[in-house]
Image (cartoon, rainbow, N blue to C red; front, side, top):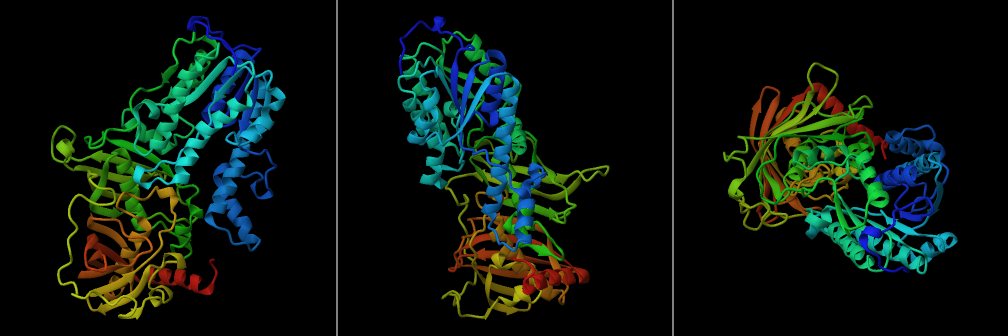
Length: 605
């Protein structure tokens, strides 16, 4: 880099003679900032992005963004091709990315600015140098807006995930500055985040990368004569902030930055600013998350769209009659996930009175938009359930959909108790050991009978990938003991999971309860409708054997209530679902049998 130091008040603004290299500038909030700058300063822009501007495939022609996954899947099935869910997601994302880049380039061209787009991975120094070579001797500034997220708690982060976050921010900037060595650079603008200032649970890597950019800006101010600044953005009302995150931030008192205001603030820093500050915080100054162990949040509403969920493997593998349905345990997970995200540092350890008011059926006519309505129980003024002094927080939550009626339709509801996280993956209380557990345990893999027939004989609705009941160790009136094991299928990016709740694995408990309920009801089909009390001591283990016991059977008119308990092979309780009620009707038995027959006939892959 070349240039000499000048007083901050004399730093020249960006003008029409500048040539700016912008990373990540063809999509998202960076693109919005560049569009505003183009209208004010008419700079020449060289945009770097990883999206190749290829022609859209035939299956995507005329299809709206939210219909791309279904269109890709339909085309593949029509051609007799079997596809993996990641293939569906990747195909849709690729089309959307191209559309977004083309839209940005069109908007920028309309301003009259000179625009160049280069498809390149900025973290590749050789490719970046080649892409910037035509403009290298004229480039006067860099706007580094590239970034990526891979949120997870620190204990769950992997080296590849961390690298995916650090690489675009740090290696990308290094590649660009190395490629522009000797260029007449005057301006360097680095997009950081409030997460780098205050931190944020799940974003240790992202916070580190952004704080590193702030330090780079401080160092670079000694060698450039123009505007050098790290812009630490608060949460934008757009970009990586989805609709449900928007409601969550608002519930925490985090002020979201409107896109138009954010773009104006960006331009002001480059065109009108005097350059006295090396780091600037733009947007809400509050941390993105409450401190761990805080009191219950104010009531909040979080939006969630399930428009693309009908292509999820779990949904495809869970069918009643002619249409897939959302597992009741995913409805439970909807509540768990929402309130845990609202209270970082806490996890759901109990659920009381969980009710399935109206299940979600993926029949093509289902609603796409739903709202999680969560409210603290007993207020937040020091009463029971407010979480003060590290005590439990109690929250009532309901998932609603607007079907056009006088009132929104309630789908799932329950009361959740959250405790502070004392050890990741474990509840605060000690897990009990089941009384009367066989001294030598059960003879796994040999006792009882193979359980495959409960899935193929019309008792259960699950496809091959969700068949976790492996053996029936004990089968007697009023009691069932099952040996279970299942790999955890990816499902909606973890949006229906909690710290201790795994909806796909928990569905095995519901399946075991349904089997005994159906036998008790003399072969009438049985589906879960209510859990009086759920206790979580530890997550159900993925791809490891655990034992499920169904007992405490209480028949009623067309219902059966049981207790379902998951144990480790040595009898330690993992999770217990008490007062678990199933409802049965003769026509439901026919629908369950119809779904099972479809799997048997091979109509579904």
